[in-house]
Length: 222
Image 1 (cartoon, rainbow, N blue to C red):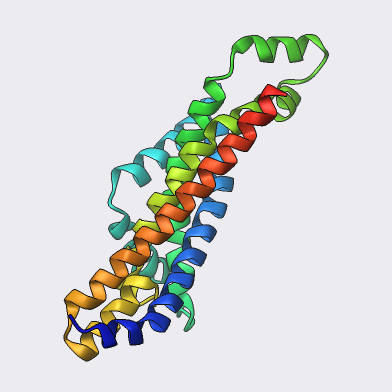
Image 2: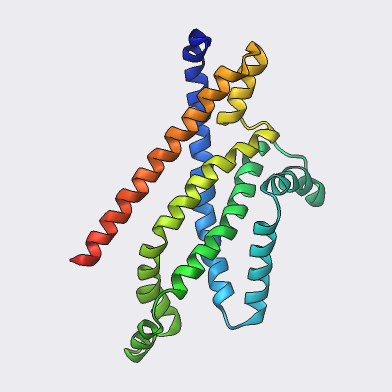
């Protein structure tokens, strides 16, 4: 075991870990916006909204994320007939991860909204609220508290899945490890470090999600 190499590699891997966090956070943030919109479409009574939303979820949940990354990175410039800028790897990675995350978050929100008793909507409507107002002020705040744990799990899953963008040369944690391995030819030490860093990140996020869940639970008991 080359401990000197492992210590020397930490700064490079930490830079990769920071980019991994940035990619995952951006993907879940954009995915939350996409997912909520798609969830509302899936719950709509209008087929023109429900069918495309369902097709979106089926496609992005039913195809490998790696294929989606290739479609965005290689296919989008070809379809739109443009020359990608130098930073297109990062842009394509965020787009692919966000679209994929949006499909899973859509199902999380849909389940959370459907778990709220129908009486809540009826009570809001009896007070003169419209359907949209009832959803915004009554249903969604309650549903959000219920979806915090699965949203946290989605962030953890995205943190690990973001390693796939290394195939388009984004220097996140795994790609940084690959660069070091290519220079030193010592994969065991480096990939052990990479695995430990992923473990630290996922455990930290898991603890933060548990803390937020407890805070929200305390708010309900007051």
